[in-house]
Length: 232
Image 1 (cartoon, one colour):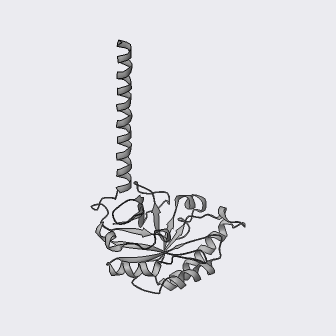
Image 2: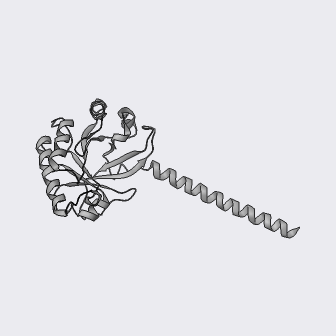
Image 3: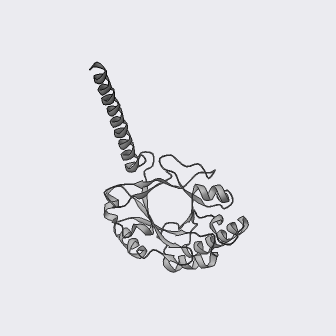
């Protein structure tokens, strides 16, 4: 009898430990998906709205603390967010400063991509500097694209969209793109980097914008948000 009681006791203790571990993991996950950087340290914070996010509720985003919004406008030579114009108008109506994002494809000529961007994004001095998302690498291209060609075509693309926007662009560089192409040290533009929870340092120089939580859950959206902060 004593042996059976001891076994039951051990199982109860083990079950309690497992439940505590699960509770701790659940709380850690909750903290992660709801985490925003301190407003004291980073007073200006905002959101990135991708094409997959559809029509955003900017009144709700304002309520959870967003001050600005970047909207994905175009991708490659022909991809476009059908909700861009609607989201642009809604964001402005809610009092946001707004910028446009182009998702860059190193496999596609710069001229075609620039043409896509300038067709979608209006020429407007009130827009924030355009941002160029750099994540896909030349290794993903069907045909060989040299490192020199990546840099040359990207520079051409930047010159063309900056002529349209009237201001220098931001380079939204992922860690894998930077590790492969080392663009941050070769093209002198302000940087937009990404790293959940911890400030990113993979570009070797300071960032201007930081996607601090790429999976932020809030009452403002049915989907997780990309939460972005500005360098104070």
